[in-house]
Image 1 (cartoon, helix red, strand yellow):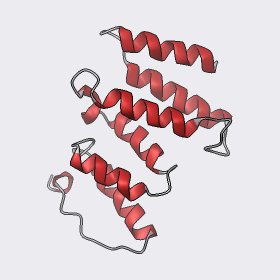
Image 2 (image 1 turned 180 degrees about the vertical axis):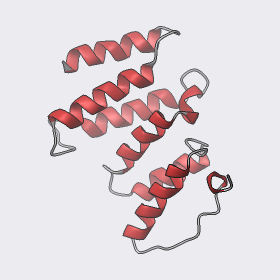
Image 3 (image 1 turned 135 degrees about the vertical axis):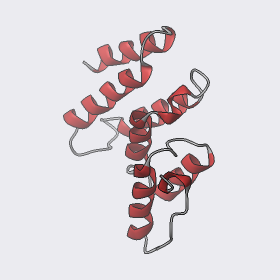
Image 4 (image 1 turned 60 degrees about the vertical axis):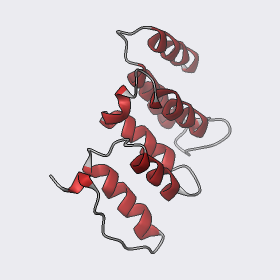
Length: 127
């Protein structure tokens, strides 16, 4: 199954009418479902998330930056790294997912977990 999902990603990246983000999401969700313990060497979850976020960042001129599924991949990635606040700073600086309140919510959770309490004045709260 993992091999088939990998092939789906390759095909989707080549075909302008296909959705590589959906293909990456399917691989990520399959990995999470089949490796419930989370990121391990065997699951390769962190590597998959790193690849998906990196490859899709500028794919189709940044088309995926405003897609909530793409933000969800970044959130999953942030939840599996040592310093998730760094990931959120990157997202804000690169205008990834900034139209979604969930970005501010997830960042607030990370900051609160680290004992930091700040007011989020980002544009996602101005709606």
